[in-house]
Image (cartoon, rainbow, N blue to C red):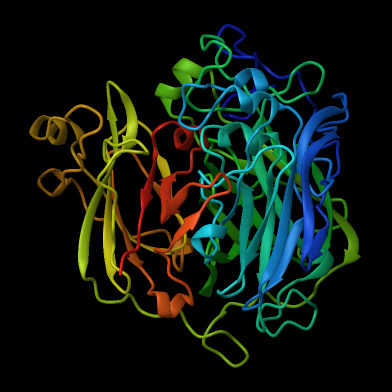
Length: 549
């Protein structure tokens, strides 16, 4: 059902899109994926799932025999976890939508699809990073060794096969991965006094479209021919953990929600319908120094947020909705028929008492707490990179995946990356292996910038600094963006400055620049960075990079 920005239903625009059936919100219970730990084998295979009570059961993909998505994997910081993933995908769920003009995609993907499992946000050897070229087809398997050499945090694992990631992830190849340590143990005796067990819940948020038979529809715009990259895949129906606009009964107490935006394209500006404040205690890279009290938070695709919501002051029978008022870019809305999706999920408060401890405010630096986040390291290099748009399409610094030069930061260096977004969209930028710290954002005069710096043809590196065209004041990041980030939202017509320290081989315990052999026998080296709007990643907004000695 289409919803206008004011929250009132409107008629779907049948002329532009493939509208989902009308679905009543808040009638299905939230499904919570099971938690698993220890070395094991997980099958990637076709499954079946009912997304809403009024939809038929539909074919899906999943990890580990789940109806949709995968189990929540729990690992211990500093302890290696070996996960063997077996590709049992006999035929692609969206075979007709594979665009064989994209890098990596082929006719064979329709019947024997490739996959590669990327543990998003992990510190991991290059051969186990889920490299976009290190894929394996139906009937094959790969064992990944995740060393978990980082503090407690919420990561996620998902497909990363070049050219078909945009289809594999919404088909169901995604799941949460929680790292625990001696401070954030995930048990009732954790030193930080955080909710655990039934009071710690993953929320994997994504938008979808559905056919009349209840199956997933990956197409957005009617004007785009079947099997052709359509730009962004934009849903018209919200889901959480694979359930359309679900409801969750909560006790009167404190809850910890591990929120992940797993959408292909949509960012969300989330708030509670009664404007009740909640606390952000961590993001991509783990806990903040102190919790941040806020009434809203913005999360773009790939980002995670660690939230504490206290329902203690509410009465049994009260309801509170998690809502979204992120406005759709007008240029995208005009061509895709996309609109704001305000209804995410509903919390229904029971009369029982739940977790009664108060929400912690200080999370680092105290007794039985992890050390404070270190101050920013001295900067050795300023590197300007671009999110660029020409008549030939969008790219990173005007280069596609196989085009040189690639970025080669030095091991042990600390750099400021100035990400100049001269496109017409916001883009979340993700670097594999490393974390970033957001320094600032500053708008610039796009017309003056492009007039002074005409873009060359695609394939020529082009990322001129925007210094001479900056406007307004430099804006500090939102308080809940403090700490370590692996995915950072970079708004259009804005320079986003992030601080990155590139670790050495000695610090990592492995050489991040080591050459390794792919499953198909090719020699690969390094990691990738890309836009996490997954359709853009499959097109031309992904690049190799190496951390050189």
